[in-house]
Length: 288
Image (cartoon, rainbow, N blue to C red; front, top):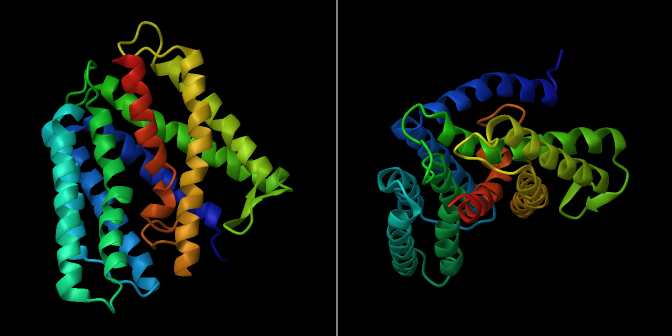
């Protein structure tokens, strides 16, 4: 008997969630290595989508940059130290990619697309992973190895995003009638989007009430948590739709096959790529 996508999703979640929580709780080098792996695979999947369109980026430039961007965040520890270094790395990558396009692609080999996709893959799939590492080491909280305070902050955008995604899936499946943007994602509905918005908002409030209460060093008032959850509920579907656009242009169903029932890293982390930077920026304003 065939195994349904939902069954595969649940099986991956049963294994992946405890492992993910453990790695986030541990923090430090183990978390940075896992984030660097995810950044590498995600960047490689972006390049795969480009190759499906006949474009030829430079993985030998982009993949090392993706790893360095994430491991550099772990080494730096704070945004103030990491940001100038990251900008220098990305500028260097851009110049090297343009130089490589001159000598390896030429005017007939879509040099602008080759260089642009090389840099875009790192920005899209690796930069959010670097910010995730920095979120785990957020300033002003206990964020060393096996510290729950930093772990809570790192898990916060994941909980909001995936609760919203799950709520959107089940709401759309059972109540969906009106298509949201059929030209981009035919299965997404307005009702599903509203369900996801509610799910991420309620998830944010519940998470803040349980783990970020007034007695916590990372205290977040429930009204502010609701506002962040609402913003995540808006932004996460944009990340999902952005990846759908790329897959449609490439003519593929999934970005990869690493995660059964989910597809590739981009398929599972598309919303996370948007919500981690949003959460980091929001908490930087509210908590620092």
